[in-house]
Every structure is written in structure tokens, then in C-alpha cells.
Length: 418
Image 1 (cartoon, rainbow, N blue to C red):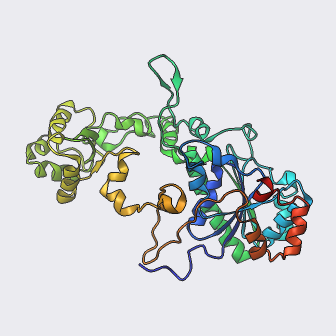
Image 2 (cartoon, rainbow, N blue to C red):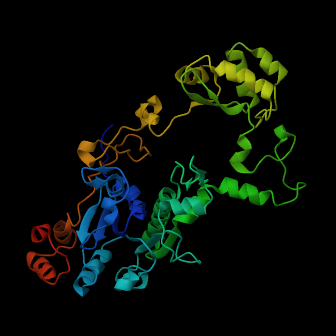
């Protein structure tokens, strides 16, 4: 596999003003080769100190979210710094405001001002609850978007205290992903028409949208049963809405293996038949052949007890190999810790090493056949690339940079703070 002549997003320039997790909206773009310039205040984005683990003094959150980006310090309280920001916008495709809506406008850098200097600019705000609605000014962190969207079930401990359970974070990851998709759609149109646009996304919206199946199931069940039923395999009887309806499944269920757990998914009759013949139990198929599609044998405890004993006879790896051999769907049940040992994971996710990025990280998950995506660089220190950006991107000479520094537009350098 050889490097491409240019990265997929080579030539796309993005100016990012962000705090904390929403800055991930441009991580996807940077991973694909876009030039992302993160404009920071002199104090910097305090993401570097947030959450855990802290790796050699810097948070994993920063090391991942801001990999592949350049950091430029501008004190936007200074008019000279605002002018530099506008100069950046003149040659950019995208401006991302990954913080509360209106943050840039309060510095004289709202969308209307930006489009005056660059009519093709795509402006994207990504915030907690979006730019409208009663929660638009409500401060929040990532888990709030998931609790708001109904994704996190409160847990009570042995002492009777309620707590946040372990859970996958959805809103703080899905919001940036949808934002990146919308940005690229807007850039394509801007390059065709010469007209940019303003877009905004709430991470809470993204969390709810990612869980559309459950919320839409509840909504569908508000209609009369004459209009909305269960499926044919369940004799059209309604199950619990969404994925809650999986609890009673038997042919589609989690089973304990000899050394762990597997997910068995023979809800199609053909897969079920393959399984029964493969384990030497054609009698199970003859007795409970099931429907052609979507038949989980719901509530069939007698069959479930048979399957419990069968699945205990092999290891997880042996069951996965068996599934491939006889053509029946069986998957390993991993944890965030054990997934790194899974052979499929190891094949698909070559770690980006800590020696390069400060912490071991996963690469961008989409593969371009015959190409290698650019290797991301380590997340920057505050203002690490200020002078480089001013010289290379804006073409400022030493005299102009010195004037900006004297005016305080660039904040204080590391040497001055030492």
C-alpha cells in the first residue's frame, strides 16, 4: 500500500475555535488530511487538564481530539487579533465554533462578518443543546447529552446512592461526526455555487438521533394495534419497544461460552438450520423450525436451556470459527479492555503509537483502498504553531509579527512566561 498523491481532504483549510470535547468535529477532517488551525486564547483550551487518564501531564482527551492540528494563540479581546482571525478566514473553507453559540459573534466574528470577507465560508457551530430552544444557554458536559436522550439508566449502589453507570458516550462523539458530515456537504456546495452557509448542531440532538429506533418505536406504539403490530414471527404481538424487546429472545441472545460470552443471532430460519446441523442436533430444528425471518423463539425456555448447555462446550474463539464454518452468525462479546486482544480488532485497528501521539490511539476507521491516510501529528501545546501559521499561511513578515506581539494580540510567549 503506497501513500496517495494527496490526502482525501488535502487543500481544505479549517479554522477552529473550540473548548473541550466538541472540538472533535474537526478531528475527523484532520485525520483525512484537512489543515486544521486551532485558534486558542492565551490561556489555552483547558481540555488538556480534563478527565482521565492524564498522560505525562496531558489529558488523553486532548491528545486524541486535537491530534493532527496546529495551535495558534490569538487574544481576541485585541482588535489586532480579530484582524488576524479575519485574515485566516479569507483563505479558509470552514470556521468551526465548537462552543456555546454566539461566542465568536461577541468578539465581532459572527457568521455575517465572516461572510463579508469570504462569501464561500462554511460556518459550523456545535454546542451542547444547539442554538435554539429553552436549553440553548444551559451549560453541560458530554454525559448530559446521553441522559437527556434517555441513553443512560441511573444505577443505585450498595449504600443506596444513585450513580452514573459505565456506558458508551454517544452525544459527544455522534455530534462531531454529524457535524463533519454536514461541513463536507456544505463545502461541496460552496465550491460549486460560491455561496457558503451557517450550520449548527446540538450534541444532544445527535444522541437522540443515534437512538432513533427506541424513540421511534415508542412513537409507533402510540398508534392503535390495528395499524402497528409486532412482526410475523411473534404472531404480530407487540414486544417491548426498541431493543428492550430483545430480552426474551432465545435464538437471538447472549450465551456463556467455555471462557466468556458469545452473541447468537440465528433469527433467520436458514441460519438456525445451519446451526442445528452443525452441532449435530437436527432434532432442535425439527421441533422448533421457527419462521423464515426475525424469529427469536421468544420465551422458549426449554430451547434456551438446551442452548445454554450447548454453548458451554466450546470457547468463544471456537464458536466464532464454527459460525464461519457452517454459516451462522455468532459474535464474541468483548469489553472495552478485552477488545484490543480480539483478532478482528487487531487486524482492522493498528494502534497509532504513544511514541508519536503521546498515547496509544485508534486510527480513523474508514479505509481508502490502495492508499494510506496521513499519519496524524501529536496534539499541540498552546500556541505551538503561532509563528509558523502567521508566516506560512498568512505570509506575515517579522515586522508585522513583532507588532502583533507588542500589541498583545498573540498573548505571552512561553519564553516570556518562563
